[in-house]
Length: 317
Image (cartoon, rainbow, N blue to C red; front, side, top):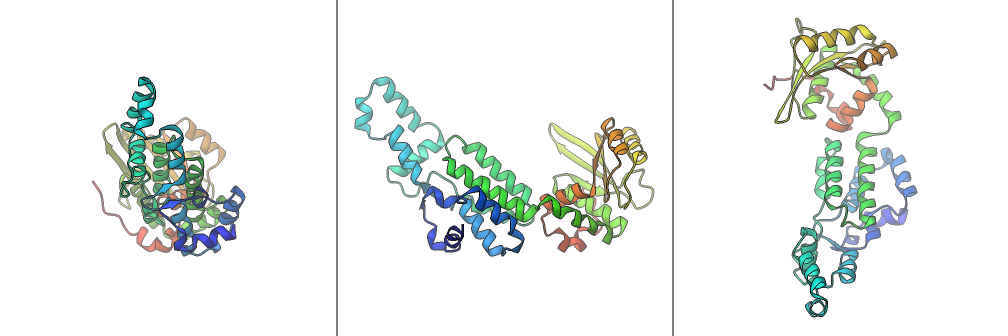
């Protein structure tokens, strides 16, 4: 793996016409080895690896020409020699899917046209929006899956794994992060939860400190086909939360005609609380799950920005 990492750190190794093996980890084991030590790696090294895995801006790969020549040779004389049916099929293909026509234009000599759009822009979403970066990669894979060579698919999957390891973290890290919730005031814990839901795409606001009506925050989605009203209740308890709070929030949700309620605990929930929630309009999020969501939607560095995140929020309605 070290030879591959050395080449990654040398910008001259990136070419517009790249070999497929340049764009993924050499083996699955080397990916695991890199991610297990990712906390000790410099940001420069992690970003350099992502730049390699994410496809350089404006590129083609050797596979493009090989695949084209083997299946859809653009030589018009050869097409003329084929049956009318085969000729029509090839011409239709060349005028058809955007990827096919773009590859044809590139191979016919228009060097300003490349088959693959670059993906290195995705790292601009880091470190603050790793979940969105992973979603963007998933969308690219979905759009191009049937045309991407296997090695490129593996490379983009490697990039998702690196982003998740570096900017979201491993399960064993979340328990330590849960302790951070006890270092802030209860009201600040409520603000932190509201900030999280803002980053998840909701219009969110904290309720008044007193007379909150059994809720600490209100969230709205106002998209066509996805209109939602969600009530938040955040509890900074150190002991496990039991069924009474689940029932109370369920009653508030019914009274206010909300779609659902979310009960967030810095600690954990009892089995009885989870069983009660199964038959209610209340979702439970414990401290470990909350840490994961904060990492995903606000970024792994959220503890360093805690002072800003727990400031009183301005109503968004």
